Length: 339
Image (cartoon, rainbow, N blue to C red; front, side, top):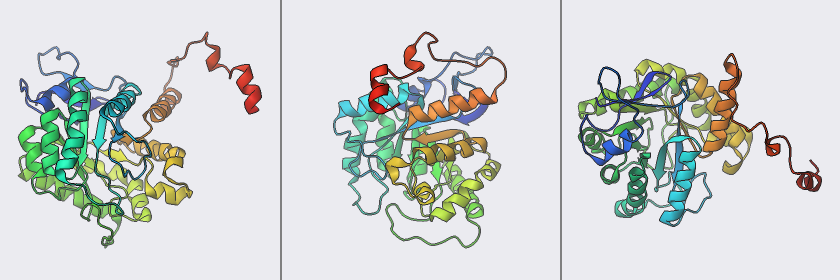
């Protein structure tokens, strides 16, 4: 393989094409590549902070998001927001058009492509590692042609062509465990312990992807929290997420503003930042390597503080020691707000 995306020195995911390949997807992934190894092997794409999980910033460009109230209606607005996510610490930008909510209709494949492709192309041209959130192989194929490096298949291979698209393009493929078709309102319960059944489901998805020609190094696993799972089932699966390391592939943790967090706290989606950060902290401690989030800057701050407190020696301080803005509020604002 042409290079490896790593965190804490561990292989995380493969770039999307063999060494020397000229596909758009190869360019998008290799944009993060460092210099070649001393032995002349292909470069390693690495997080600048060894030991950190990679952040995947969510960019919803549809009109019916489950948990995001931003209205990114123009390409320029979408680009500006995605670039802010990237600058705030997102190594990967995950772009989605089709919402998973069950009270809105499914848009056509052509509309999904028309909305998605321009943003993917512009970001990939900027050297950003782009992921596309879709359950349609045709959409994934179009996105890879525009430079997407990762296919985040939220349908659990419900489209029988999806694995073949990943195999043909070399794009990394996220396998998500779910027992329901996209936007299905009803789904069966787990017969046994959810964590064990999720493990089995992911094992079957791996087998299907490999049979279609997808390389093992291309695969990322997502336990699918809130996908055809009750809140109690999602909680149990998250509690046991560390067991999924037995499958030997990187784990993607997608807990940002999830419904199960709302059921724990009683808070609506836009008020779940504290709950999200707590769940991320738990997942990172359990070894999750890619963290999909709406609030990139806040998550990066949480990881920076956690890293500093757990490390030894002189702490790395990013703030300006001469800045009064870091010490306290401006006097007028403090008096106005009662600070």
